[in-house]
Amino acid sequence: MIKPYIICHMVTSIDGKVTGEFLSKPSCEAATDIYYELNREYNKNGANGFICGRVTMEGSFTGGWYPDLSEYPPYDSFDDFIHDDLSGFYAVSFDPSGKLGWKSDKIIDEDPGYGGAQVIEVLTKKVDLRYLSYLRSMNIPYIFAGETEIDVKVSLEKLYTLLNITALLLEGGSIVNGYFQRAEVIDELSLVVAPIVADAEDKPLFMASMVSDFELKEIKKYKSSVTWLNYKRK
Image (cartoon, rainbow, N blue to C red; front, side, top):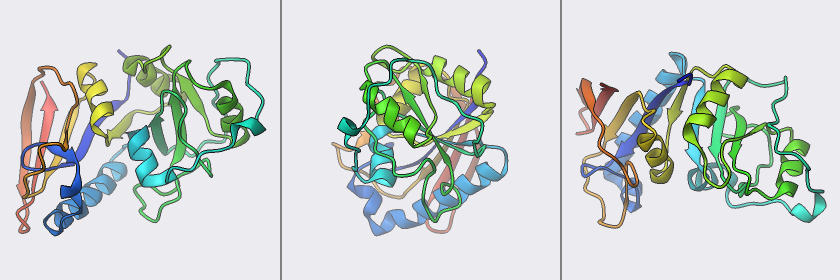
């Protein structure tokens, strides 16, 4: 399969959770700082951007805003929209129904690991056709990868062939990580483990996971009791 190299890069609790109130605790601050440092290192070493699901993108970047689609006519084609004026560093948004409202075609963030990244929407054909006109008006590229659910392998092949994306950080959340894990396309795991146990209802690294094998390649312990675990797919 032709696809980018996928690195799942996440902060986790000791019990393998990746979303929840534990992330806002003081004992998680050092892990979060290390996570961002590693993010920048991966970008320096060849990553072309990052992948997140709708919920993570909304929480981190769009803040729940959504355009008034009544202002846009339905676009009458499910063709992919890729234009020539792209940045080469991408924020790939897995947004099956087109529910994210972007006010810019690039991520606006002070962190150099995210700021300036070109937004790419990955959609399915259940999207409102007016949303396509909105994306085009914003000059936001999009690709289709499925009828009602995103086909991970199709999306990755398109990202590689249409945009020459060779490596991406998969940065959750749990549902999107699970899509990738079940599709068996994750090449590397980069797990920053915070010294805290999460709540029982917090979300795991992979939602609805299946059995797969990885090999531990590197482990690093920090003074703050944070541990970094690096695995490669067997």
